[in-house]
Image 1 (tube, rainbow, N blue to C red):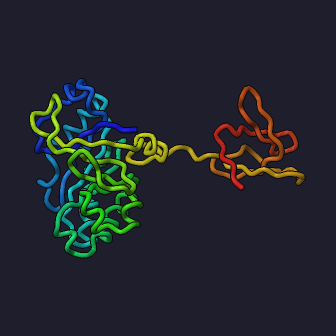
Image 2 (image 1 turned 90 degrees about the vertical axis):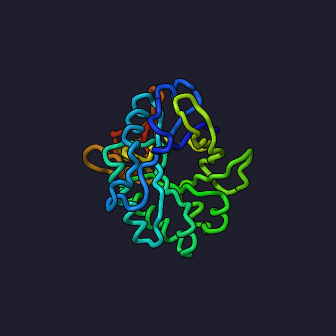
Image 3 (image 1 turned 180 degrees about the horizontal axis):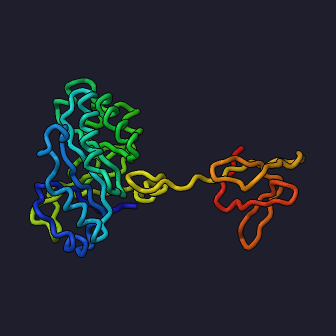
Length: 268
């Protein structure tokens, strides 16, 4: 899959999202929510974030977020994370929440991976599907293998080809893209992962957590397991024999009791 998107901030001015949607060229948008420790400096929240989020939601453009970092220690990264989490409150995002790591001051610390982990850990605790936005040369020079593969990765490299053969969910391929509804140049992205599906399935980024599945394990030539009451989602039951009724599979768990295995998961 290859999905066309953009990432925007106050530098794009007031966007006419209705026109952007009508263009048919934009299938998702990554919105800058802020930068640095905006809890201490509220002016660092992006002034267009609330408007962009509301309008994208209204016209039906799925969105994610990016937060620009200046952190040079893990503690500073955790402070940035707290500011980002505050901006996300009460909202839902179909795409990841990206930590935008571009500053040489970060790379020069020699602690880039620690800083990223500190931010991402806090976002994950808050229920987010978190990622890293970073330019291609920095991925290869400053990120270790764990960081490259642990989080959703958005890589920036302008031109006809991304010269990175590792795992990458989004490629930012241009900073001078044009689309109806935006009066300035805008960054263009290609996405290769169905993030909306994954995020909804996992109940991240403000979406409700799915009900846990019933888990069952099959037994052969053993006594039937007895239990009282109905099987509860998330609990493991032993099943002795199965049957299908109207296309739905059932498992026998008592002498004459059957439970639906339609949404169940088999375990060893």
